[in-house]
Image 1 (cartoon, protein in one colour):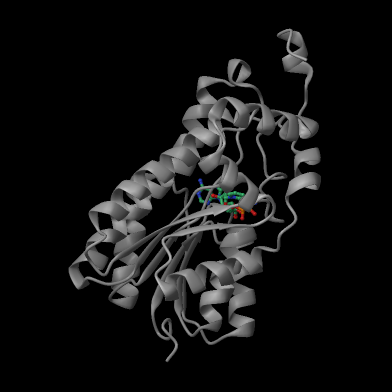
Image 2 (cartoon, protein in one colour):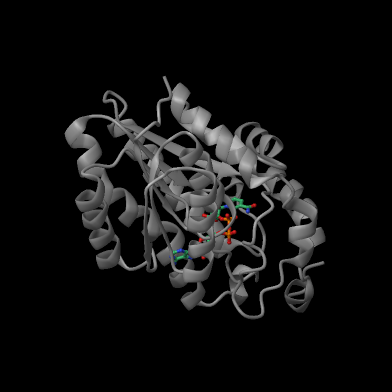
Length: 278
Ligand SMILES: NC(=O)c1ccc[n+]([C@@H]2O[C@H](COP(=O)([O-])OP(=O)(O)OC[C@H]3O[C@@H](n4cnc5c(N)ncnc54)[C@H](O)[C@@H]3O)[C@@H](O)[C@H]2O)c1
């Protein structure tokens, strides 16, 4: 029996990349979808693709996950339309400023935390009561391999993804004796638009070329299987296994050097040179 047939699956950031792949993956399993994104055009394309390939019923909404009231209103509209919710994939996220910590503005930290962390928090808080009421379903929170190791020129992004990890690991401990699954996803380099949909001035082109190679459809399948098999932590995609190994087994002082020498090949090194760092 297909576990997701006629279930209701919420996906945030469904207008592109992995969010679109999650939508397709669960629709192919017979689920109904509640999709949102702040990019109306991308979201409409996803809905078209889903409808062309499946019979899924789709509710769509355009707003920012950083808008707390809008997220709770979305949860109300999902409940009104479908009567319940079964899977919530808090996937929407953005890249940071692409600068070292000393050059990253406080505003960039606020923006990135607002979307990548608070978006996940609001999505969890808005839908969790229904999952707990019926003691079933899944919350899936998307972190990153930069939520396993801190990466240079990614302090804003890493901060937000470690926050997602801390929140989700604490919540999964609280709920570990229930039938509500809390899952963390740490994607490695996935071939999506994240490194091109960036803040003005941020240049991730070399980063994109070097790391973002795994298909988003592959990780969507792996996440769906993780939900089926009760796996709580998914680490998948280019460079993910070696990052996970490093984060678990290499002393931080050495790990910092390994991460620096690998990631620096993709960075704009000018701000480092200005600070006297070679
Ligand atoms: N691509 C990777 O290599 C990679 C690696 C690790 C983690 N991730 C994470 O995976 C998730 C999905 O990213 P992706 O790679 O598919 O990127 P993507 O840019 O292709 O898709 C992200 C989607 O989120 C939407 N979005 C961004 N900010 C939003 C907001 N405030 N409100 C609503 N929607 C918003 C975008 O419009 C876009 O449709 C993100 O959380 C990202 O941080 C990506």
